[in-house]
Each structure stands twice: as structure tokens, then as C-alpha cells.
Image 1 (cartoon, rainbow, N blue to C red):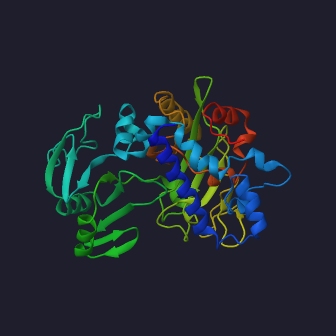
Image 2: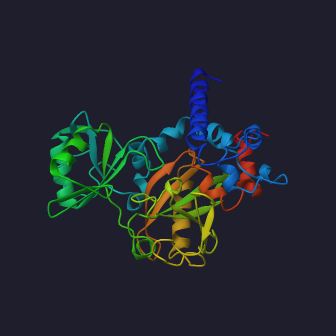
Length: 373
């Protein structure tokens, strides 16, 4: 094991311990039960989410395996997913499925990556399709981002690293009204926000179509589609629809109180939606805030979305394990990929069923030395 891998393993262990400490008051368990969970690689919250009794814990990917082992699967190519600009370039052959990246905020300057911001103002993708890096200083970041926001109406500012909805600003402008993550801002406050950012991408806001908006309109509701490899071919072992709630808005993240509904991979039919407990875990047939039906509803265009993601995964075999965050954009299978995750979270998936009950999934994790058993 190299010094770098030892460091990364230690970092992931720290995150695992921090996650347990951050939630210990939410999940009130006797010390004896916590020790039972810890010895088997689970955090306390997993006892609320999974059916671990009667030996069934062996069918679940443990928290230790997810935090410490799965980040190794993609190896050096993890950067293709962890760096959002590199990920954007990786999707260049599938341009219709990636949002535009207008530029980057760095050290108070706006950097147009691969083109002139003014010349390409009407272009959907100012950077070259091949991903060659050319950065041109286009001036003051606050002025350029404000100009683009006022022209586009909506923008997303993303730190080039990080996931889980952290360090993302959803920005909108209309008739002098600035909003960031749903909160009203003055022009001066918006300028202060932008001036404090460093290594943030300025991205197109992807509009979901009526289906997602009807379930819950206050968030962009995404599909999390997992791809793995079996005998040289990618497959989708599990997929979920994530929708926001009043608890999670302006994000749809399950960890923030959003909903997770499993998608039948073959038919696109939605199951009941799980929500992390304030007290007890609940599964909902309808959205708790809008009353829209979820369970039993067929996701429009699912087959085309699934096959499209598999095609992209097949062209990127150097990253065999990906959690794709997908926004459906029409009812015939159009979609945009807004993010790729190198070690996607397991709780929003396994709350529906244990991953290791699928022999292909177990074999994939065994092949990549993930399973600690």
C-alpha cells in the first residue's frame, strides 16, 4: 500500500467516524447495540434503515466498505468524477447529455475555459469538445457572473470538488430580484458571495420537465443510476428517483430529508418513497408536501434514459463504478447528467433492498476487494 493510499484510507476513516459522531444523538441506541453494529462495519443510523437481523446484515454493503473500500474501485481515474470540470470533459462525446459550463471563478477572476466569454455568449458550450484546457482571463468574477445570471435567469455555481449537495449555489434573477438557494439577496450580497468563491464552475441550470416538477416543484428532482461492470459489460443494479421535500429544499438529497423511490430497472415503475427518520423511517406512496402519487407511477422515457446511461458507461470503462445524477428533460427519454459520483452513498439505495443480495453486485465488489468479510 502506497503512502498516498494510506493517507486516503485514513481520511475516509475519519469521515466514517465523523458521520457517526454527527448523528449519535439522532439515533438513540444502547451502547451494546452500537458495539454490535460497529464490529460489523455499520453506523448507528444503519440500524434504523436496514433489516440487519437474522444474519441478513451479511447482504448489505457496510458503511465501512462504502466509506473506506469503494473509493478505491476507480483508482487513479477517480479524478474523472471527483473533479467536475474533468467530468464535463469526459462527457464531451455525449454533448447533448451535459449542461453547459460557461467558465470558472478563481481568485476573483472569471476564467473562460476554451473560449471568449463575450464571443461565445450565445454558445451552449464555450469550451472545446475535446476538453483541451485553455483559460483566458475575462475580468472581474462578480461582474461576469452577475451579467450571465441576468442574461440566463438561472445559473448553478458548483465547487469543482465535493458532492452530496455541498458547496452548490442555485442562483436565479428576475426583475432585480436575486435569489441563492431560495433565499433573497441584494445585489451587494450576491456580489459578496461570488467574490468569496474560488474554483467554482458557472453552469447552466437544467430544467426538469413536467413529471419531476409535478411531484415537487421547489427542487430539481434527479435520478441516481448506478452502473457497474459484469463480464466486460456495464449494467444497472439499482436506480432511484430522488425528490425534494420542504425539509430538504432547495436540494433533493436523501441525507437532507428528501425522498428516495426505487425505480424498477426493467419497467421504470416507482416503488414507495423512503424518507430518513426524524423519529422512525417512513415509506410514502404519495409525496408528503404535494400529495402527488409516487408508488406505482411509471417514469416517462425510462428505457431510453437507462439505455443512454449504459451507452455512456460503456464508453468510459476506465471508471467502472459510477453513480450518475440524471435530470429527465422530456417525456421521451431526454436527459442531462449533472454529476458523476465515484463512491455513491449506499443508504438511499439499500433502504429499499440489500445490494449484496444481487450476485452480480457481490461479484463486482469482490473483484474490486471491497467486501470486508
